[in-house]
Image 1 (cartoon, helix red, strand yellow):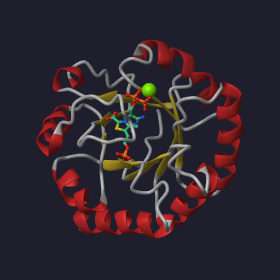
Image 2 (cartoon, protein in one colour):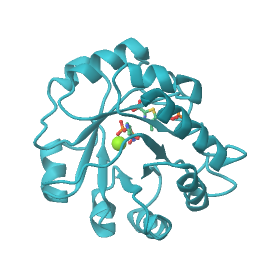
Image 3 (cartoon, helix red, strand yellow):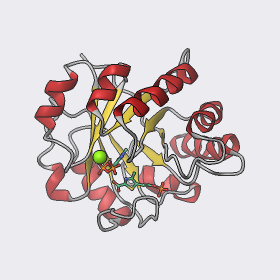
Image 4 (tube, helix red, strand yellow):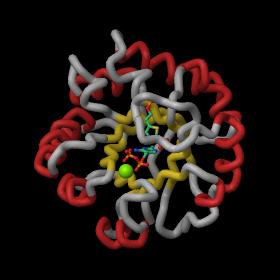
Length: 212
Ligand SMILES: Cc1ncc(COP(=O)(O)OP(=O)(O)O)c(N)n1
Ligand SMILES: Cc1nc(C(=O)O)sc1CCOP(=O)(O)O
Ligand SMILES: [Mg+2]
């Protein structure tokens, strides 16, 4: 039985946006602010680089409940014994990813359209990332934005927990949770902010308020 992670406040790292602090120090400060998961997303790193940064992130996360997610790179996820591998529709078939990571690791899958959520196999996939909710310069190759209504349609049809992504800011927290998502995945509203901890705390506070 896999141990599901808390998707509430899911930081997705970006090496450029995290400058000048860097991804490791950004994560340390975001952990202090209340993130529940952190994804190492680095579109140009080699597997060796992924593993080296992943090891540093594991040190930061030691003794916390914050889950380590590896984006795209199965080999690094395996080597790091990460909590989670996240893949997109074009990365590799879900069955292949599951075979490579084994039965224990959590597997996240990106879902951008309603027809795709109907194909999600809950015996293989543990959560879905739904987006982009809004257009975002952080991922220039993103699919068309789906808005709150598109998010709600996919979230209600999902057989597994969901995290919303794409253009999300603190002002969107209540509507994202009302739409049925279990959490928010954030890049630029935390990475590169002047005060990473307080930006994270703001999301954390609003999530708690919206759920109370
Ligand atoms: C939580 C979460 N949701 C969606 C994505 C996007 O994944 P993908 O479509 O594979 O695109 P890349 O991030 O790999 O460029 C994600 N990374 N995380
Ligand atoms: C990594 C990623 N995936 C997306 C998707 O829609 O699948 S949008 C995105 C980037 C989100 O960045 P920001 O919080 O800065 O808008
Ligand atoms: Mg991917």
